[in-house]
Image 1 (cartoon, rainbow, N blue to C red):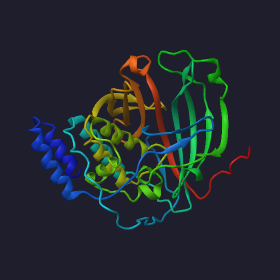
Image 2: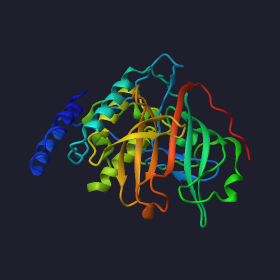
Image 3: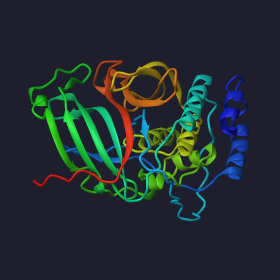
Image 4: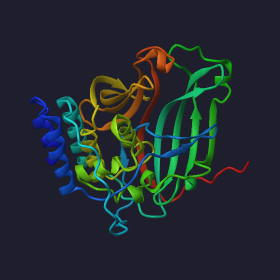
Length: 344
């Protein structure tokens, strides 16, 4: 457990001190220990629709080592970045869950891919499809080949589209069943216009800070101020985990940094897209009427996946407690090659 996590554990048990004084102290602390960085959420495309994923998290449950030599990908010093807002006094359950997850990440064997190779990630996802008159959840099993270095246009995807599921409170429309079956291999993305700090390829992620303060600073790069900025930072946690691979040291720093984001709360029971049960940490978006959860195995503390749950039926246009989106990353391995993309 590093200094910021310990600080949160101590402070979570006592009354909150004077807010202006607390912020001043924390700003001085952050200025003293901050490190430069930048990263963010992944852009993904499916064969059916192109979209930017900004905040759906996923978990990595297995790592098969296929390369033996780690390669240094550091690109040299970078300019200093402005300090993020002061961290929050997180609930004890949030800090404890994320600290256990950080320690589990450091214990687990991991791959060490080289430039020119691919990270092969298997996952399952429930994604909302919203048309003019219908809403439903597309249920897919996905395998993606992610270039270790480079943008998403070099990636490849294969999908198995399963029977659709109902969006909470809506019937499944007839057209939802027309795309069932196997698809691909296809190009993962037709374009990749992300800012540098939103990249999530392994080469970029492996250069991020390995300390809590530095990673927290990264999460707030380009974010707005106030509660909206906190939600942006929370979404970016998922962006670095969904169909991506964050090295263990950075992953541990990410989990501990997430515990410092204001608004984080604990969820006693949650289930990922593969049906695996666990505990979760979450943040509510009052504007969307949903709660975004990151799910961990209750016993091993490994990161399983994520889901979005309706908390305000009127704003989310669905049944309270219903799941509108869910992911489960099932395995990751390294490959020297990717499948050849089918020609249309």
